[in-house]
Amino acid sequence: MHMRTIEISVGAFVLAGILALVFLAVKVSGISLSADRAGYTLLARFDDVSGLRLRSKVSMAGVTIGRVARIEVDMEYGQAVVTMEIEGDEGGLTADTGAQILTEGVLGARYVNLMPGADEEMLGDGDYITETQGALVLENLIGDLVTRLGA
Amino acid sequence: MIRFVRSVGSQALERLAGLGRSTVMWATAIWGLPGPGDLVLVLRQIYHVGVLSLIIIVLSAFSIGAVIALQFYTQLSRFGAEDAVGLGLALTLLRELGPVVTALLFAGRAGSAITAEIGLMKATEQLSSMEMMGVDPLHRIVAPRLWAGIISLPLLTAVFNVVAIYGGVVVAVEWLGSDPGAFWSGMRDAVELWDDVGKGMLKSVAFALVVTWIAVFQGYDTEPTAEGIGLATTRTVVLSSVMVLAMDFLLTLSMYGDF
Image 1 (cartoon, rainbow over the protein chains, first blue to last red):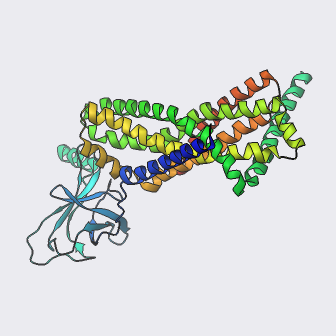
Image 2 (image 1 turned 120 degrees about the vertical axis):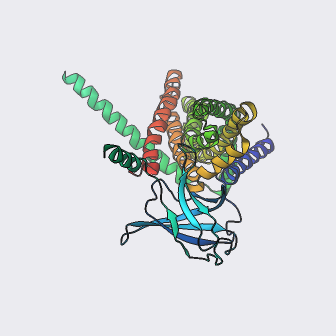
Image 3 (image 1 turned 180 degrees about the horizontal axis):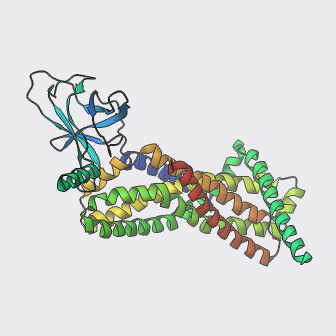
């Protein structure tokens, strides 16, 4: 085997490996090269965020418009504070926008659904969504049902 | 009875000595490189262990990807969750099957060849004549093979993952008619760059270190007879496979098991 052939094939091999890595990074894990897309953050307090995770979807009318960036607990009120990164410019969502935590399909992942309001004022960067409804926890529902049936 | 205890003891000491010898060999060889003049040697070895392994890697990857997609699809479609095929396929491959299967194939295809080659060099006294000429066989023979393995295996793993995902696409999307949009977006939503791609590659580097180490040492330490070479080759494949699987469990535990 000529040295030249070996060099060329090793070069092709390494190139193929690197291309494969790039493919895995871009196409499979879906990092966007322009990660610095403009956006703003909104916060919301929920009574219960069970099942919601970092990078869960934030959607409106079924269209994904953002991601959950942070979930913290506020010990004072016993509530969860969810920070959401919303794509696009601020000013698209009214101040009385509602947020609820829903489930995708039967066994699907939890996500935050935003419901449009009718207020004149708009939500800006760092504002709180006040109309919220937390996650439905199956055990609590069953517990409710049992007590009601028992009564 | 006493003879039995004594034989167990000497066996254990022999194993320990082997581990010691192999560590010394590995450490001396790995620091011996790379000088600029040695790159040609490494290049040649990458050709042997990497490029020549491509065919088996690509063929196995395609079949494995196809079969995983098929299994996921048949089971998930019972719950109407075919959309999760892409996600399941990508996570299984990136986290576990990609690095592990590639390492196993690599041990069988390249590791055994390295052991046999070095073993035969030893049996035909090429290694001792090299030493006689003042050429260090650790530097000239062992080190390039170690480096070539460490460079090649992660690249092979990346190729494996891509081809296997493509195999899954062919089965789930092209053949069974899963929705391509859901397939890819489900995958992209679930796969994290560092947690899945990065850690999988890290596993692959760890496997490369161990597999090449075992292969080179078994060849270097073989009994210089035809039978000895045969035994050493078998030991390379068996030992590397067991080590890869055991290490995979430990690595998975430390990388993903935050409990």
